[in-house]
Image 1 (cartoon, helix red, strand yellow):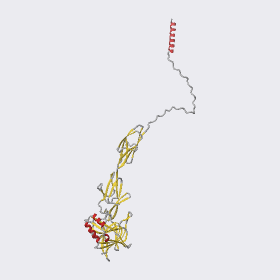
Image 2 (image 1 turned 45 degrees about the vertical axis):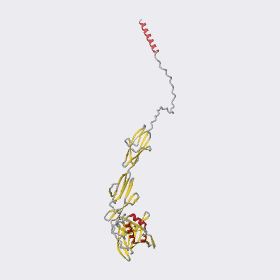
Image 3 (image 1 turned 30 degrees about the vertical axis):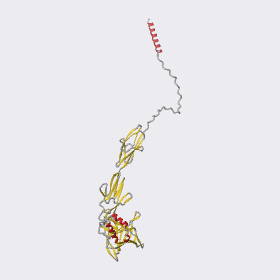
Image 4 (image 1 turned 90 degrees about the vertical axis):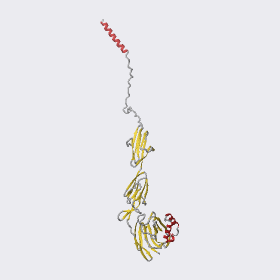
Length: 420
C-alpha cells in the first residue's frame, strides 16, 4: 500500500514538471554570428564624430567721437559693443570745455544733436559723435601803449587775452595817448603805437576793429621816439642878408614825429619819416622856397611832401599850398594874395568845409599866385594844388597867416627867401 502511494506521488510530480515546461514562453531565436573581415592596418578607421552646429551671426556697434569730446555707451566708455541678439544702446555725448555736440551720425546719416541718443541695434552699426568748437581766444601781445577794449571796458597793458564764444566784434583803442598815439615811456623817450601785426600782415591802424570767429593773435607795433624835439633856429634870406626865425615840429601830428634836423650853411636839412614843421615868417608879399626832396618809397609809391601857407589858425585851421614827390632843386614862388583869396572865401563859406572844398575845386586863381621852376632842369613846372582844412584842430603855438607849413617823409633841403 505504501509503495503504491509513493509511486503515485512520483508520477504526479513528473507530470507537473512536463506541463510546466510545455507552457513557458520561448525566447526568440538568435541569428547566426557573422564573421568580421580582417582589418587592414594601413586604412584609417571611420570616426563617428558629431558635426558642429552653426552659431548665430554677431551684431556689432562701433562708437566713435571726433576731437572735442567723448561718448558714454550705457554708462561706460566702450568703443565696441557686440551681441548675437538685437540690443539697446544709450549714448551720452560728453563735450570738452569749449566744445558742443554738433550732431550724431548713425551709419553716416544725421541723427540730430541731442546730448542723449537711444538706439536699438539689430545689425552692424557705426555711430559717430561730431563735436564743434565754440570757445576761442584772442591774444594781444607786446601791449606797451595802454589800450581800452570795448567788450570789457577795461584798460590793458602787457600781454592779455580775451575769451569768446562763436564770434566777437572787438574794438581796441589806445588809452591816454596823444594825437600821435604816443605815451611817456621814460624820461627821454615816448612809445608810439604804429599799428598791429596779425599773422604776417601788419595793420597800420591805431584803432583796431575786428570781427573774430576763431582764435587770433595781435601784436602791438610800437616805435620809440624822443619825448621832446626843440625848435631849430634857421635863417630867412631877405635880399643880401638873413634874419633868424624858428622851425618847430608840429605838436598835433597824427603819426609819431621821428626825424633828425639841422641847419647847414643857410639850408634847413631834415631827414626822417613822417615829419611836420611850422616856420615863423617875417612879413612878406612874395616868397620863394627852394627845395630838394627825396621821398620814402612805400608800397611801390612815393610818400609826397608838402609846402603850404597858413590862411587861418582860428577859429578853424586852413592852409593852401603845393605837394610834390622826389624832385631835384626846385623853387616854388608864393604870392601873398593867395592868403587873402582863401581867407575871404572862408568867411563867405562861414567856415564850412563842404563850401570850401567846392571853392577849392572850381577857383582858377591858384596858379597865378603859386608858380614852380625846376632849377636843375632849367624849366617851369606845374605845382600840385593842395588845401588842408578847414579843421577844428588848431595847431598849438603862435602861428598866424603867412607862416609856413612844411611836411614830408624822406629827406629834404630847404632854403627860404623873402622876395618882396
